[in-house]
Amino acid sequence: MTYPDINPIALDLGFVKIYWYGIMYLLAFLSAYLLANHRAKQFGNWNRQQIEDLIFYGAIGVVVGGRLGYILFYNLGVFVADPWSIFALQNGGMSFHGGLIGVILAMVLFNRKYHKSFFSTIDFITPLVPLGLGFGRIGNFINGELWGKISTSPLAMFIQQQGVARHPSQLYEAFLEGLLLFIVLWIFSAKARPAMATSALFLILYGLFRFIIEFVRVPDAQLGYLAFGWLTMGQLLSLPMIALGIYLFLKAFKIRL
Image (tube, rainbow, N blue to C red):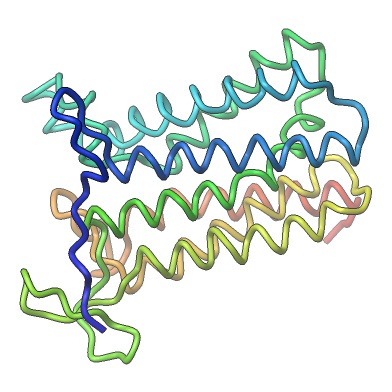
């Protein structure tokens, strides 16, 4: 397969440019809104105003947390040299782990406003997240960023500008962290589960999927491998997710080792 080398600008109106990356984020928030309304009908303890505020708070948490996380975890040197680079969202550069922290903090504020418990909200929104992650990875693919390693695999894509074939790790992540994770969480959360269980399963599965895919994904050039000739920042940040997820899952079902 050959990488289609898509123009990252979806529409140029002269006075403004609309980027595919931004469109993917809009699709992510739209899918979350539609899914949230469906879940609200299922569980019956959410009204329309709460759903709209939930998506608004979540969107702010994703964008602010994701961008700050990328700067702090992956690109602090560039930010120090050019602080205005933090606003160049059209070039990509968002951290999932930073976005996760941002959303958690946003949900704390949301819960204070509506007097909801922490995990009742987190468990509610968790199944809404994966499709948005999938759209984000498609945005990475269109931008031609976060490529995998050079490979002769039938799944690899030939990149004409680079003259090599690479794993389309963005699409691997879109499938595993996006579509597959969504299906598992949506089915799992369709029935009443103990508090923390759905959130815990998300942490475990996302952490595992991300950890595995990092083996075929090229690490960020400014960081490289952190240790052992294979450990990446993505893997390092995913390990606490997996550990916390296992702990919460066992606690939710009152399982003692």
